[in-house]
Length: 360
Image (cartoon, rainbow, N blue to C red; front, side, top):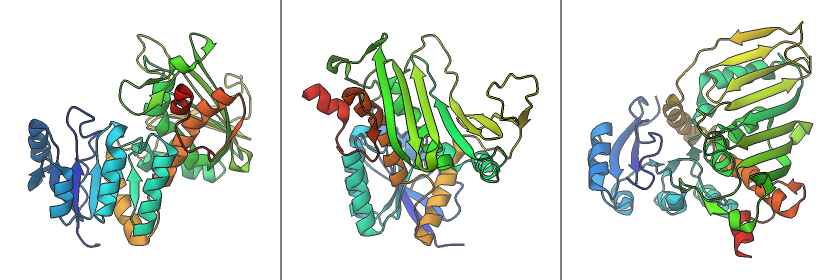
């Protein structure tokens, strides 16, 4: 067993809270001890300490970073407005980081974080939990082994509930873009259309998301990607009131079949035929079964992988670089809509395109 790592968690009750349990993921990792919690809210801090068994608590995360000799810090709030400040402070204190998604609102902020982590030799993992699940890796192994032939395309659909469009793309789509990259690699270009009530968005349509994760626009998103090695991709989301959020998942099409799965791969279907129409009479559908883990187990698996990444000197499975790439897949859609052109990735302008457009 590797050495014991000391961890802390930063929350912000009422303004992003502790995210999706990013402070609860240490109990089942045998070589990591969560020793400290920081939260400016008294009740939130007390509850987090009770939930985790942390020995010490702080109202100011900076004090925690100064007084505690920590190895790993969870930056937990779901609201992205505090992430850069918190992550940079943790890195400056010499800590590796597990960050809630989205890691940042802009590529330029992601650049700053990644450059600092690289300079200090520190690792950052990002809470795209599905990327760590055993069922996702079983599907990837099956695809890599050629079960559906050479991959031709990959398609993802957002949850498409009342948040459909821009909010769906940043809050939930970031998970899907991370998975798309896991399966087929980096994006080299994007073309997108963003509309409101069937018309192209205007600068006055730009707004902040209800869950503060940056600027958004549109109630319908249609985007098309070119990945490395010639794979094509597509993402779509549209607002649907009074719906429970379906579909939400990924479909990968190969030369001899296709595989489709929901966002956490709890349901996986294999189509073992190259028919363009899945309802074709000779099409074979198979419901596949793999070893599965619940989505939130991805937090624990992420910490275990982060420790290995630290010790092996590699990026975590869901890394800061991967989070930046997923964000550029999102912001590239807006850039394409604004410019009316196909846009190269990485983005040349590292600012948020909607903020620039709105203020121009």
